[in-house]
Length: 356
Image 1 (cartoon, rainbow, N blue to C red):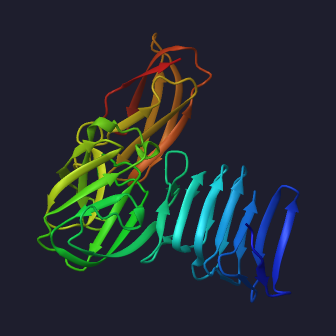
Image 2: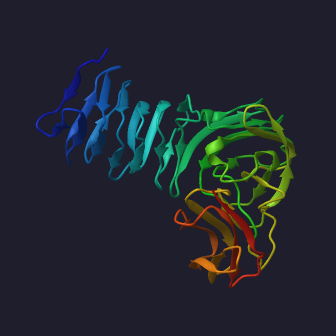
Image 3: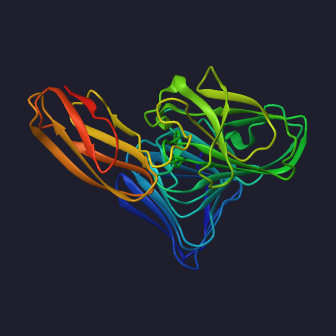
């Protein structure tokens, strides 16, 4: 049931962009109040807030098939319940806060460098392979909880279960989606910063959940837990065991800090100075080939493909930056067959590329 919204005219404006698209706009100085547990549905559209939205105990649902944005200037846009049911996805153009439930039904929610603050009471609901939170840039999902002798506590349903017999006190958990890199490798596209008040002698166990979309080409069977202090690139291998349902569990942790998952084999986070490791995927490919590597320094990298008779059929120059680099090579025009990818500017063996 969609209940009446209290609109403080004339400063609130709701514009129908077309018969199938809507944008809810609150202009500067304007107010929108969702009475009680009212329900606002925005179909194939977004929200622009330059004023004040009072969420009450209401629900805002984003529905439809197109892509949209949530625009908020200044302080985080406050929601009580926010339902993501938009197949085309939603991108944040400002910070938001959700104090009860952020329900993920359909589509991808891109933080786009902004934070989603769940406070001490908010929770993610229903996150799954076809509807999840990620970020094409920086940004965190934040949740604060009191963790005293937690037993498989998963604050906010962020996907990190914590067990310890110690009273950790007020704990801030930050979930991010930037790949963590070292000079020789990189992680999946998910990490957690765990910041307890008491962070000593925890003997903690963590169960780290992830989605297939976050694997970033890493072999799932090779995943292990890694930790680092803050933004340090000095990663420590924790270990861990695969469990059912896309997770890795690891115990015996004295303290908690930044935790991610990575391989110990193909793109290990163990630092190997002055060495680059290059990943080319998908391989075989029908069209585009993605080249990914972590660079310890800014440098120029040249790559080229040769055919079976040694002729160069494709070349590209990459201005590599410190950290993770990724470029696409469009090779759909090449005939099906086997090619060799060579490199200069770095010491790396040639890679066999199969073109379907």
